[in-house]
Amino acid sequence: MKPFIPQYVEAVCQEMKIVSEAAGERICVKTLFFGGGTPSLVSVSQYQKILETCRANFDLSATTEITIEANPGTVTREYLQGIREAGVNRISFGMQSAHPEDLHILDRQHQHEDVINAVACSKQAGFEHINLDLIFGIPGQSLERWNQTLDLALAENIDHFSLYSLIVEEGTPMHHWVARGLLQAPDDDLAADMYETAMDLLNQTGYLQYEISNWAKQNDVDNRCQHNLQYWRFLPYLGFGAGAHGFVDGIRSENVGGITEYIQKIKQNIPMAFPTGTACEPITILSKWDLMQEFMMVGFRLTDEGVSKLDFQAMFGLSMESAFNKQIEHLRKNELIEQHPQEESRLRLTRRGRLFGNQVFSQFVGNPPSETA
Image (cartoon, rainbow, N blue to C red; front, side, top):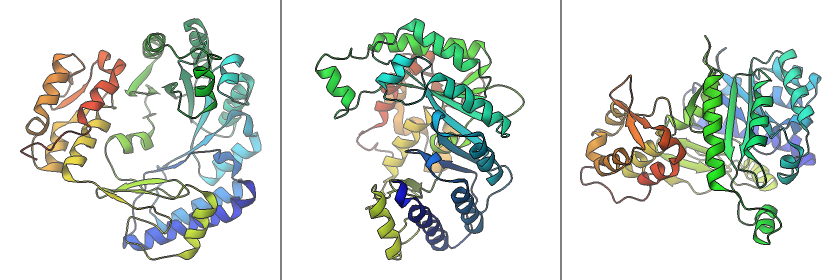
């Protein structure tokens, strides 16, 4: 990867120019997110170039949220200072766990001391918005060990946490170890206990769970990740770079995943209709019914605000109940969703629904179109 970084940065900048020109108007950008792989391999000057290109081709404001993901052991104070001065104003570190054994199982190279140092250096560099990613349900991880990780993460006094249950993907070394009995399989019941423990502890310490995997510190600033909200509110987004995804005007796009193939495709500069770029794979055009289902599926991830009946009506021209009455009644009956206590035009997950979120989301996948749709 490293030898291709200069060419890759040039290609990303070129893709932004191509797509912005195809749009025919300057697009207002509220969030930027540098994620996937190890974004901190890119130098400060290269980030400056990307951000300058973005500002030249899109409308960014002083309040635009610009996030970078980083591994805790890969950043220095000078690097953090440099990217902060370049305009990055939010940083997310993959802490995962505070326990060496958990980190070893996850094949992470850092130690908890690296997390402490990374957060301290980020604050010194002027970052006010800092996130830590944590993973629970790791093979061999006890509830006590998870509590220790939560306590040490909270001790960092940051404004955001993202918590994810471990999924053992097929074809990975971990899947092979579990299959051979070399590693204990994740315990779903224990993972549920860990999730509930986290919900209670973070609520008690002043964090709002606004999305099924995300918590933001409650104070006089909106500490929610605006990029997350863009996804779950079913708003449009553009994707630049290898493997990047986009969603605009009911069209899903995905760029080729290989770095060298991506660079080559951008160099070809074949004219494409907005919102797709030169490196785009075949696009997916979603039907109105597909869009309606996805609106419900992603919206229910927002545990605080849920899905809006008014927004649904405005977007699709019919009521939510006329399209999904059967699904809504099923979920209400099983106490997985409820009417929002402050806004009767919204539905959201119950606490039980947060624990069994997949049962809710699956209600809005693969349904035959409603007669009213």
